[in-house]
Length: 352
Image (cartoon, rainbow, N blue to C red; front, side, top):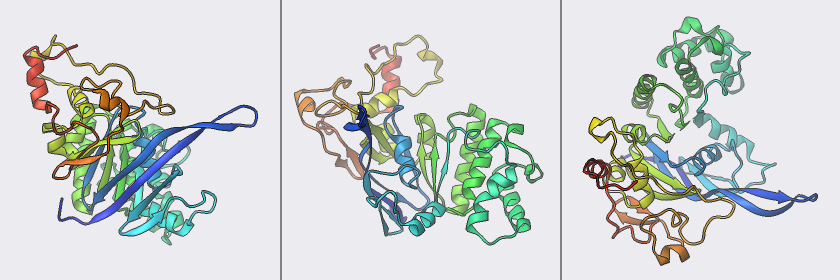
């Protein structure tokens, strides 16, 4: 993907939620949901974003089209800077409207994002009412084309969401996201609520649409096996921060952060020889984002933690070509890739 043009650049994105107490609602602290996140996205690229629940993946995704108002940061879309430090009540509406046309979201729960009182034609075609001059017949033709492209028969467009399965509803959400011909799709757990067979169909469709329309994806997910299959690069988040970023193959074969190694070992394996074998379990829970631990946020759960980790916050730095890690000892830790972890578990070398 090196020869592809960078179309989206996110710099120092932050989203802090104030904690208020007392009758006067005095601000006594902040929940740092997204804390100084930066990355780029190229045309035709899929950027996987992984991490535990509560790490800030969804909030980060929603901040980009400003469905959630960021605290600070900057977005450059096709080289045009969109300042996110603007007054929330006086944003640049024209720039925001144009941004949202080109950056669309696909949500995790399709039923929650589809109005049950509207037909499929009304749901998918609604963006055209406000962003085009097409008459009804033209909108119906375009919606029919998009439904067929996403695997829904066009004669069903006058039915309602409750008359379809979960996989079909997700296809409708994808069709709605495509109706304004966007450049970027932010897929927030877009396949996590679907059966495995349906997941495979949706993923195959995503890949076909990407080739046909030169789409770029930010693919937010828990399932690392899905991320490995669809992503060109992977970003690993922990407690609002990026702790590792690299091309997919490097993340799965040569991780450079202990948290990434733990995530790799959590991938389920269909190998029957591993039945009954001990699994590595990451101890503890994600720390409170309103009161994160000093030093490295991960040191409270890290099996490799040293005194420096408890005192000094690591900086995201390059440990290889295009491979970034926020670990003091990224170059020296004996971290294992997914294949090595499975082999070690098979030989009984993992701890419970």
